[in-house]
Amino acid sequence: MADAEDALPWTDEVFDVVILTATFHHFYRPVEALGEIHRVLRSEGRIIIIDPWFTPILRHVINGYLRLFHHDGDCRFYSQQKTVQLLRMSKFPTILCNKRIPRSSYLIIGGKKMPSSYQSL
Picture 1 (cartoon, one colour):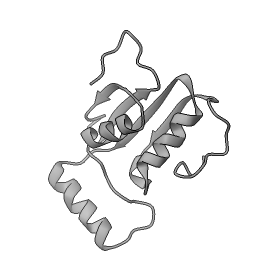
Picture 2 (picture 1 turned 90 degrees about the vertical axis):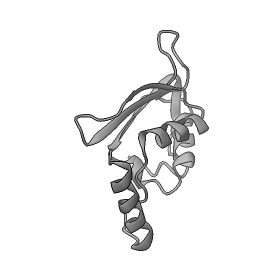
Picture 3 (picture 1 turned 180 degrees about the vertical axis):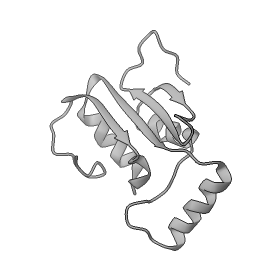
Picture 4 (picture 1 turned 90 degrees about the horizontal axis):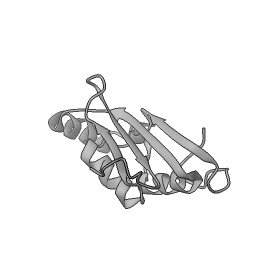
């Protein structure tokens, strides 16, 4: 475990998988965090993101509350589509998206390289 938004304490391309479980909404700078994760993943490495899923209205209310009343830890909740966009900005092709697992979270799996057996979403 480390602060992914700053330089991670590992050399380049050392991990096969990085798993973010209920952590993505804690990043103040998600693009920087994803860039560091990209750096430490091996060329065939995968990133797995599981984060809370909220309806657009509820997500808007929660994010508004977080902006008004600084809450240590939680920064911003993202939609599945926004998380995919942030992954793409960080050079991760998206491999798999599942909107809700079971109903309160979403799952996204990305990789540094897109295997030929998958299609980008």
